[in-house]
Image 1 (cartoon, rainbow, N blue to C red):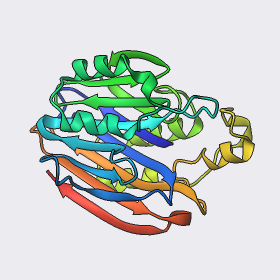
Image 2: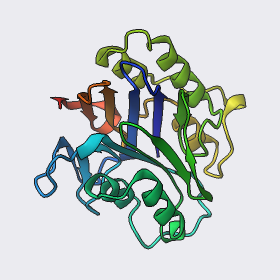
Image 3: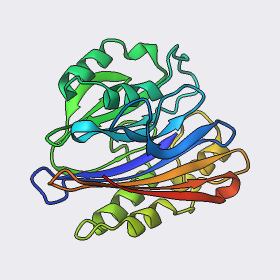
Image 4: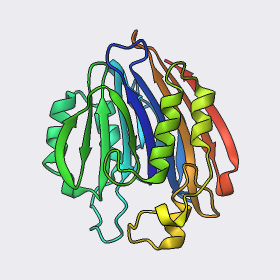
Length: 248
């Protein structure tokens, strides 16, 4: 499970602003944000269990990010979803070519939402309706249903991002990702995981003994192609583990 809010503003001085939380079991091994030694120009965290990633940037202005679809009844995919991000960042397909190819075999993966883009384009693919969608200018929110599904944390985080767009700074974007407030029971979605789990997962920042927000990541892309990436890492109960800042 994850949360991504982002502003896509083609032609703006800062065309892409992203604030994202990666939620995962703390026991799953991973590396923090850094340059991948086996793929020049790729900067991302890395899942050490399957080798993929959840969010990163690559050569030529490439960007990709992923969230899971929350559905306990869905079939288990035979491939790791993290490779969907990694393959785009490390590859040479255009945005359209890549999503068209993934759409043809989306059933190889458990449910996912995928964002891929470059300096000129940003596109979205949902595994439950695998029709690639090119995104226009706007502010978007993505959790574990479809794009802009109005879950409380999506609405809250998207509104907080919108308030910062005149002067987005990493510290402010990281602050919006740190909100631990759960939603009222009456506003919770019903995704089949039970009320207690729905409540736990309803906050922007999730913290518990075994599962929670492992990384908060901010990406600011400038029109000249320069990028700033900041990631904070967390352990059980939200304990701070470290921070990485990259100017690319």
